[in-house]
Length: 134
Image 1 (cartoon, rainbow, N blue to C red):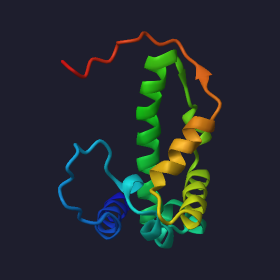
Image 2: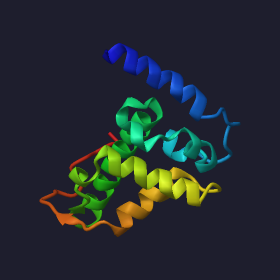
Image 3: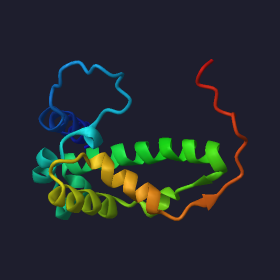
Image 4: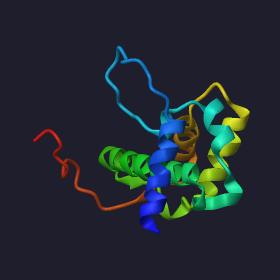
């Protein structure tokens, strides 16, 4: 079952994420969230939940994106967005609605708005505990 779902996810990735020329600026984010809303809106099927491979790919991307944003938020002021508030139905509907209304934008903009508007929770966090610079 997992193998088929994973294969479908990889197949969907090929249809949703277009090949782009090498950017002049360094690539900071990549994935379904940085694709075109115009293309993604047609592929999202909120009623199908995570059975739809595009929905599944979007939900996984959003979880990772918000997790990364949380590290930044925690480092800045010890607050974060509770990921429990991000169930698949909410994420898929939020991005589908945003993309239908804003075909010229990227789904990432909907998630950025969600992060900005979400209530932040305080957490115990020792600044500088993650050393990615080695």
